Length: 94
Image (cartoon, rainbow, N blue to C red; front, side, top):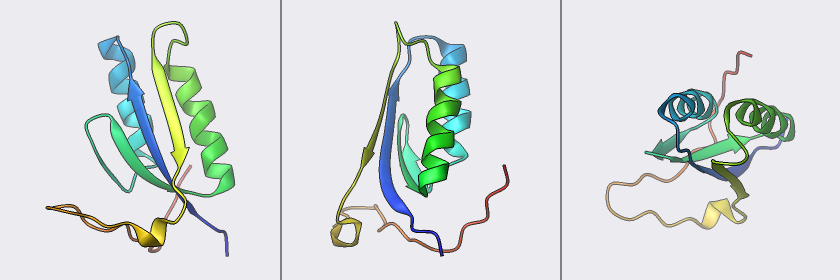
């Protein structure tokens, strides 16, 4: 079984066209999120593919993208309407 890690992906993109493209890319990997910040449970290979995909979208001179591995994901406390991340079954087509 492949080990998944919880990542937080966020972007700040200046062009509306690239913004829509980045949103489309991230939604393919995200298990939750809001606006320009997403929670992603990724394997090592999915992480590599995500970074390659997003690199094709963003302009390195104008845009920003960050992918942060969140350690200790089982100790996350959610407040308000948030839900705890679930590492359930995934079906990936790519």
